[in-house]
Length: 253
Image 1: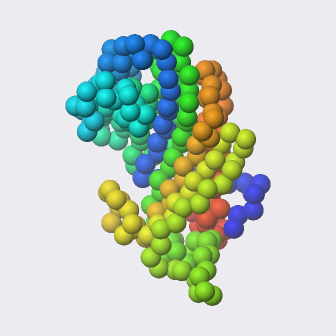
Image 2: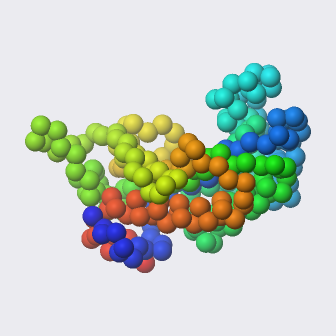
C-alpha cells in the first residue's frame, strides 16, 4: 500500500479512467415554480450549443409525478451530448451532472475547467440555489498490458474468508470517512459484475465515488469549487492505495 503523504503521480503513461462524473443535486424556489422552463434555460447555454439533446427514460413521466416523488426529482430527464460523443450533460428537476468518457485528458487541462463552467452556469441561471449533494466519481478499467494488473491478486487488497484469499471473481464496496462532510465509497469488481461498455481486455474495475454526507448544504459557488479540489485529491489517494508501489513506478511518467 502507498503510504499516506507519499507524492502521487500527476499523470500515468496509460490512463485507466473510462469515465469521470460530477453530479450536483440542488433545490431552488424558481425550479419548483417553473421546472420545465428552468430545465430548458439550463440546457440552452453557449457552452453546450452544439450538443445534441435527447430525452431520458423518465422524460415522459408527468411533471406533477416527478415533482412529488423524491427519487424522481433527482433523476435527469434530458441529456446533452457533444458532437464527438465524449462528453454529456444530464439535467433534471434537482440534478445536473457532467460526464467525460475516455480519453480523460486530465484534471487541470480539461475536466476541472469544464465542471467549474457547469457550476458557474448553474449558479448564474438559478435564483436562491442551495446545493444539497456533490459527488465526484471516477471509473477505472485496469488491464495487464496497460496497467500491469492481471487479476485481483495484483492489487494491494487482501480479502480473506476461512483462511483463504479471494483472488478470482469479486465484487466489493467499502466506504471511508474523508472529512466531517465527505465520504468515499470504493467499488472493486471483476468484469463479470460490470454493466455497460468496458474495454475488452479489462481485468479489474476500480470505481471511486467521493460524495458529501446527507446533511450537506451550501449556497456558495466558491465552497463548491474548494470541495471539488479536495474531492479530486482524495479520489487519487483512494485509487492509488489499491495499487502496489512497484506498479505505480511502472505507470508514472
